[in-house]
Every structure is written in C-alpha cells, then in structure tokens.
Length: 498
Ligand code: ARG
Image (cartoon, rainbow, N blue to C red; front, side):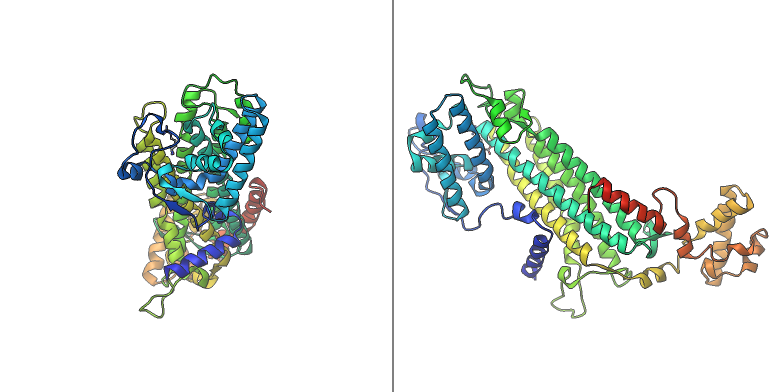
C-alpha cells in the first residue's frame, strides 16, 4: 500500500516538474560503499596505525554527504582554476584536475564510483579517486584550502539550489491554488472560527488564503538565499592562507555575491542551514494546516470536496474506505522538519569557534527536511489540481449554524441606525427564536422578525441568503466573488504566476 502511494506521489511530483529530480534523485541509487579500514592517506602522516572500525563508523559521513558530489566537484574546479590563474599551480595541473573531476562525475552518475567509508566523506573520496586517476596534480588541489571551507562551500551550494527548487515548487502550488480558486470563485461554503460555522465565504477565497501564506514562505526562502550567498572558499582551516589566492574569483565563478568577510565566520557559519530549516518549518506548518482542512473537507461528515484516486488509498479490511493518506502524511511532515530545526539548533548551541566535528551533524537533518518538504509540496500540488469541490454539500452545511446572523445585525445598523452592539443583541434574539422554531434565518417569517424589531422592512428578504451574504462582502480582501477575482489577478501578478 505504502509502496503504491509512494509511487503515486513520485508520479505527481514528476508532473509538478523539476522538484524531486533535484531533491531526491540528486544521487544515483546504485552507488557502492566499501568499508575497508586503513590508515588515511590524506591525513595519516602523523599516525602509525589506522583508526578502529568504531572510529570509522562514528566518523564517516559518506553514506549521506555523497549527495554533495556535484557541489564538491564544482567547488574543486573553481578552486583549481583560481590556483592556476594566481600561478599557485600550473595550467597543466589545473587541466588534469578538471578532466579527472569530469571523469569522476561520469563515474558517480553511472553508479560506478566505489565510495569508501574509510575515506570518511565526499571530499576525501573524490580527492582520493582523483589521485588514482591523475596522480600527483591531485595532491596540489588542496593547496590554500581545508575541508572546513570546502564543506561549508559545498553545503551552501547545495542549500542554494534547494532554495531555488523550493521556490519553484511553491510557485507551482500557488498556480494550482489560483487556478482552482478562479474556477470556483462563486462556490459558497461555510467559513469557520473555532471550527464552528461563522459566516458564508467562497471556496476561491478560502484557497486564496493559502496563496498568501505560500507567498510569504517564498519570501522567507528568498531572503535566506540572499544572506547565504557569500563564499566561504579560501577561508582555509579558519585563519585564511598565506598563498596569494583570489577569493573574489572563486566566489564569482560559483555564483556567490562576494567572499565572506571573515575566514573564521566563514567556516563556523551554519546560519544558512538554520534559516532554511526555519523557513521550511513554517512552510510545513502551512501545508499541514491545509492538509488538515483537506482531511476534514473530504470526510463523509463534511463531503465538501472529493480527492482523486491518485491521492487516496483503500483499506485492507473495509471495502468502502477512501483514506486521505497523502494529506495525512503532509499533515505529519512538520514532525521531521521541526525536529531537524531543533536538532541543528541544539548541535550549534554553545559550540566554540571555529570548526568542530559536531558540525558534520548539520547535513542529515537538512537532507531529511528537504526531502520531506519536497514531497509534501509535490503531493499537495497534486491533490489541489485533482480535487473537486462539492457545492451542494457546502450549501447544505450552511443550512445550520445561522451563518447570516452578522448580516442581520449589519442590516439593523445600516438601515435602522442602531449601534452595532444593540443590533448584535437583537440579532441574537432572532437567532434564538429561529432555533426554537427549527428554522434558518432566511426562512423565518417577516412577521416574526418584526415582532422582535418592528422597524425591520421587507427589504430584509433575500439579504439573509448565504449567497447574498458572501456577495456583499466586497471590502478589500473580502470574500465576495468579484473581490476574489480581483485578488486572484493581483496575486498572479505579485507572485509572477501565469
Ligand atoms: N565531513 C566533514 C563535515 O561534514 C568535513 C569537514 C571535516 N573537517 C575536519 N576538520 N575534520 O563536517
């Protein structure tokens, strides 16, 4: 069942374009990992024997940081070109390094690369293979660089691509909501406060609330990208380097706005990961609130929408069931994402400058949160595109709960000049009378209304219908269909959605 759901989600994700190709398929699946323990050829100079297997097990990050391979190779190419331009290595060595790194990309993407746990992480795995391929020039690549600035650079590049992919996925979801809102701008449904019937609203209006929330989410991810975009490369271990490097050149070629101003900050900063996780946590909470509404709306008791077969599952025992599993899983994803944010905040709290190995714990949470948010966004977009509103059920739900009681009070204020508090009280008495008679407000006799407030005139008839109530709320940002159509047009423009 889960396998089936996962496949459906993946299909929907592909339909909703690039997102998962970047987030989930950013590492070929058929990689191999060997775990032979031996003295490290990269840092083993002062050691006489190799680390214990347990040391390797706790130390190695290759099982997950191999997802950084593209960024690591891009960073190394930029660094090698800069070293050559600054005449720190020869042009021939630089070319050998580039062609070796190209070969490694091919091997990784073909699933032929053998990742080694003994080589700890993606940086040393790639450097070691480069040495096997091109020999001595590989050993010059790490001049004026440390794994500390290298990993910060790789991880920033990865998170930057992620932020771009999320922005696109959020725009796709906004587009789906806008289309649905436009198609159903006239459909009237109950609006709730305390999950009790409050006032009639339109379905399009309700969906547009989420377009705004997702717009703010996009703003947070975009802001995070601006602050992230300083290059740590060339900060070296923590103190900079005595080689005449050009940090502006590497920053520029990797698409950063500038090199980070302080080398120690450059290798210690994980704010960019925290900012991604914070924005992701808020976004996932938005998606979770929407998912909960989908669960409620699609229940037999509400029946406001139907979800498609593509995003529901059956029960192994109850043949009649159509469970909104995808919505429930979207509702649950903040558990992981907020957990990842908490986890990284706790790892960094009290950590002295500069790099400590604690910081290696930054990646899994971010990867996990990225995958969770990616699939939640894709599944939500799929559900929105497929869902069908049920206007009859929404209208039927408006038969109870006196949703136009405020319209009645507003009438008495507008037409009879009553102060609102007094009108509120009179309307309350009318509601109580209607409740005793088992009637809705729009069905109550004019005579009965006038018995309570004699100044009420026949022009009240019709005003208390739910459709008129919604149509009357034309204030800026209100629920009237015409106003919602204006909101939709503005939102398409503000969020640059076609
Ligand atoms: N795998 C390490 C990490 O992710 C790379 C940096 C290692 N630096 C060090 N000084 N041991 O953090």
